[in-house]
Image (cartoon, rainbow, N blue to C red; front, side):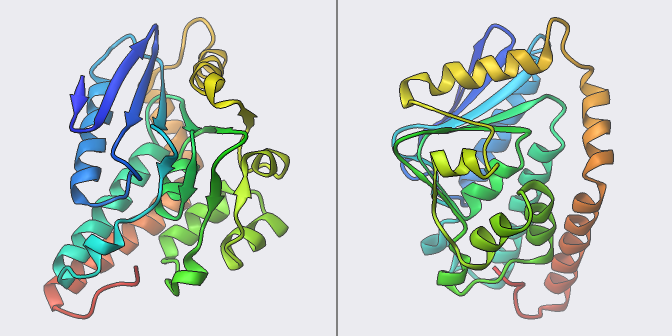
Length: 244
């Protein structure tokens, strides 16, 4: 089933969401199509896990700043709100999730990846990077909460968050940013294998899986909800936009 250039394929009891839109930069259309793909995954009652991946050189190159920056404050806030919703949806998705990082995974794309339960990355091409320091864009509180919760601490957070260092796949695995690396040709098979090993023979109750994730990530979700409420209040007050 296609959703623009975002498609869903089912292999046994694992759904694979493939993002095939060039650099997979994030804008309102992309997020709407990704949300539709997530809906499609959940429409299959026998699916027990989900894999997301890109096509070609990019998993996702982050927010489409060329589109976003010229927009007015209301559209910018709408995008930030929707992006937060999608991140929280993946973080608390009622199935085990695996990001199969096929190439470059930058900024907003890295945020999407860390929302998954597991990550496997291509070994010989592609960087994982949060380059906000070079873009002079501060992390909002919801992003900080998510990244501190989902990335290894100490020097890994220092190098990725403060200094925007680029990690290739092998270094990501060595420093705990991803769970495994493999050749591109094996990436999807490895991700599907991880999904099947996670769910075992019977899988998990979707209701219980979502509840467990909401319990475990409660503080992250609460910070996001407060940030979203603040953005809505800003819209009604016509104040300047929140930080991007």
